[in-house]
Image 1: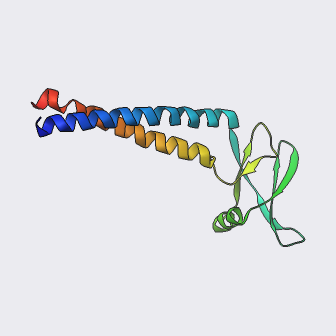
Image 2 (image 1 turned 180 degrees about the vertical axis):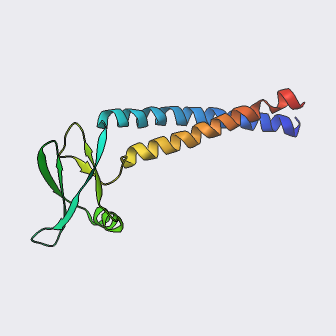
Image 3 (image 1 turned 90 degrees about the vertical axis):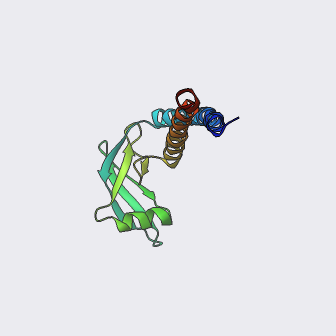
Length: 132
């Protein structure tokens, strides 16, 4: 077995692993996105309640809503010049400070990396056909 044949075998293994891991994660990420529904970007106000805990206040769908913020959310919003939140179109009382949920972002990122590796592995698996 020559080196180019070994590259082809390794490329094929990488392609299969990338597909086996990437496609289900892509499905999970897209399913998560469809279940959560669309989110609208709106300005929010960050206030302190009576116990000095940060609280977010926003108006959506003709209603004014509020919820307490975690310390990481409060730090994230303090860094922004204008605090922005993302409110669910289905339920205006659900607000998050990031455009996409962490689960959706992680699944889609890992799936794109794995599918990219699968494409590169697929190309590498064809090297013995054209090279040798």
